[in-house]
Length: 176
Image 1 (cartoon, rainbow, N blue to C red):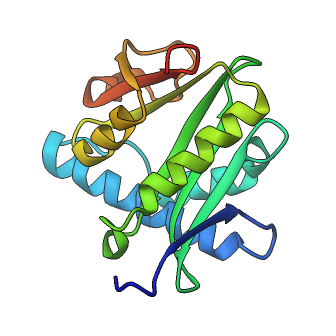
Image 2 (image 1 turned 30 degrees about the vertical axis):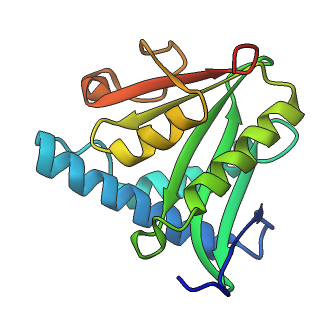
């Protein structure tokens, strides 16, 4: 990335951005699945089916209780992140991903900052997330914003047999 490039993060616009969303979610889930298979010998889901289901239920990631953010560099969609409601006080970050060709330029940080601002604006007191254990760079990013490791939370969507391969984290805005 050169000095003329910068990361721009904005709310997704539907239906105009649906292909960006579909592609980034598919890339993320395929990459995650491939790594889970290679590292742990498990295949948590079918990425195409998971994306189809997420598109069908996309409203959970939209205002007033959620957000779907896209990051762009030079008009190229390079990252995505979502916020959804667990309850009136707790939001959950889902599907946060930056295309490997655009990593280490601040896109992940910009997406996370936008999602956390949206969570505060929505009135959430806490934000939670789950993340595969192999995503160490993501864990460092989350910790830099004040996230702490927590035990698995009851609202997590991850099936029981895959939870051992994930970290669960929370940011409490009252102590952050």
